[in-house]
Image (cartoon, rainbow, N blue to C red; front, side, top):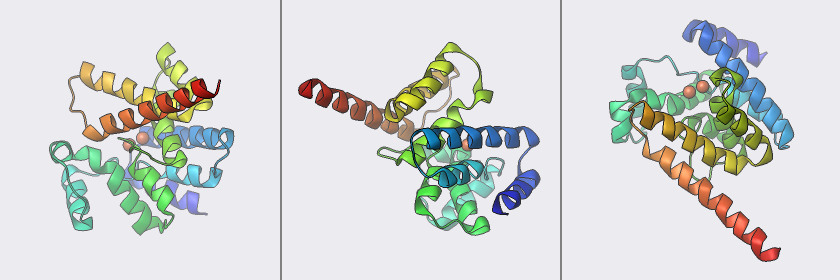
Length: 199
Ligand SMILES: [Fe+2]
Ligand SMILES: [Fe+2]
């Protein structure tokens, strides 16, 4: 079974604590996919494979991204760990023969999101940030609730949450997180405007 093959590979390539995170992301992605009525199998697969490259060394991440011809932006150059999402999609494609573009994109989008990303990508992005192991604060509880009510709003607010943490801990912010946040904020505001007009 393919899932077993991925789990065996993960056991050799990421620590046990990371595997536990991955399994919680898989569970939450399945729950969100069922709730929002999208392909559960795709969500489970993308979630299971989202952190394949999480423990690759910076040099390996940079080398694989370069070999693929991916554009390496200045923030990823300083912080190559950010490339684990894009490189994870390459591992899924090359080691596990994943050829579903939407699944590959969901893996690649799991860290910084992407303006206009698919529902599948939104679900994996949210499951990664909000799985139960991320903590038990009222703010996280609220975001988890929102992820069931309104996916787009949840992506916007989860970006805000991540951005706040990055500011507080004095870490670099990738501009794509900001772009994702702005896109989903506008999407929510525009749909509210349409609702207001028709009311
Ligand atoms: Fe990750
Ligand atoms: Fe993750």
